[in-house]
Length: 169
Image (cartoon, rainbow, N blue to C red; front, side):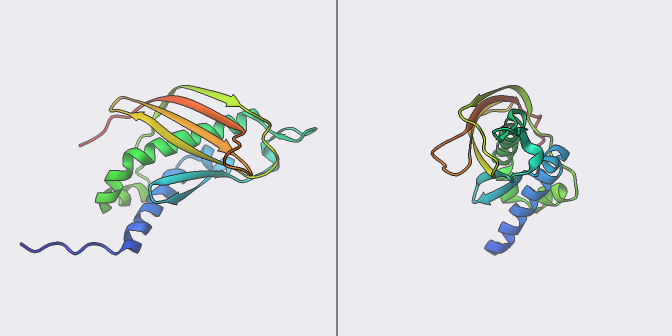
C-alpha cells in the first residue's frame, strides 16, 4: 500500500490563510469595523486598526464602548469558529474550497456576553485574543482580552456563552 506524500508546508499554510480570510471577510460588520486577524499556527490575534469613527468621547479622546464590545465579541466568535474548524481545515481541501467560494459555515450565536471595561481605550490600534474555555456540541464558553500597547495591560475583557451551530457529518 502506497503512502500519500505529505503536502508542502506552504500549501497547508496558504489553505489555512485563505479559509481564515474568507471566514473573516464574509461578515459585513467585521469589514465595517476594519478588524483583521493574524494567525500563528492555531492562535489568532484580532487587530482593530484605529479609525476616527471608533471614537466615542472626542474630549478624551477614547474608543467608544460599543466599538470595544463589538471588537471583543467578533474576536470571540471568530476565535471559537476557528478552533472548531481547525481539525476540518487541517484535513481537507474541500471544506477550504467551500469557504473560499463563499459557502461559509454557520457561526456560533451569542447567548450572553459580559464586558469589563478596565480603562479607556486610547486612539490607537487594539489587539485581542480569545481563549475557548469549553466547546461542546451545543454550547461554548469563551474569554477574551483586549489590549493596546502592552499585552499585560488589558483595557477590556469579556466572557461570552455561545450556542453552537449544528455540525454536519
